[in-house]
Image (cartoon, rainbow, N blue to C red; front, top):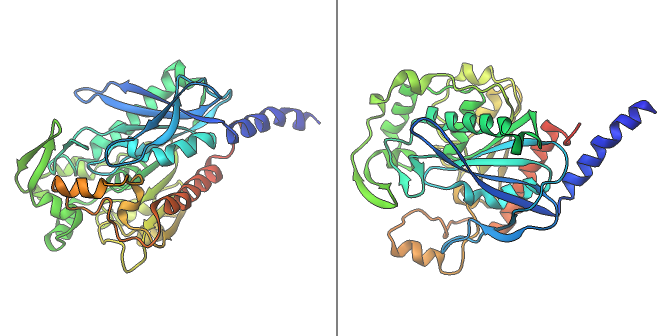
Length: 352
């Protein structure tokens, strides 16, 4: 009976979280030396607040959330989000809002130097900056009483997409090998390697001409250092970048569950992000692929006319014209299930 009585509050917290009527959202700032972060936080919210659409713009559909809404009572796991190269964390709102409704506090920074409108090839391989961003967000969220009172600091996970998947790899304990990465780009001319070949970057939302990046000129010590943050207890990695560059031994030493998701099939997944081998090397790795998807299926659903607008401004990536055989909304539903199930399984119910 005593065990039952002590379990009841945890069950109440779990039920409340699972049936949060809203996904609350708030923008916060996290100070870093020379690198202040704009962070979006989603959380389980009770009814009320002002409706908004996070990530809504001329190209993408936003995800429904509410501002100024009180959080659901209880303590919840914290999930970090890391966006892809040249993206924004708001573009992951379709996932973050559903995680918040399921009982997670979700926080993601826009990474300076690799965010939409502020993205250059020279900044892209500096994974140590991204992992420092994520660790700084943990520091801020667990120290600020506005958030620490609703966060279970013993239950922290990370979800990363593309370059964000590489950051999630490294903060979980993976280490990259600079020569392996440079050698891969010596022969591979697509995706990240094409970006390093130079041409155009973006500063202050304006295109700028940039030179080719010599990967071998990168600070080797920093590129190959360990960026492990032991507060991370689980990771979900969607099409993780630097897939050809990780040190095998470092993967074998990762102690936490690592859930790898590739978008597409073996014939269509780019070499830059193929992750089945990575999953096999990590002791607690799992691997799944999403049939009918492409790399860009992780982006929000596009609005009518989005593809035409992108073409008019010279965008060459198939952001809205990807060749997936299934509607993006349908793919999102499957991916939400994969991510949510992994996080619930590893971090358990809030309060437990």
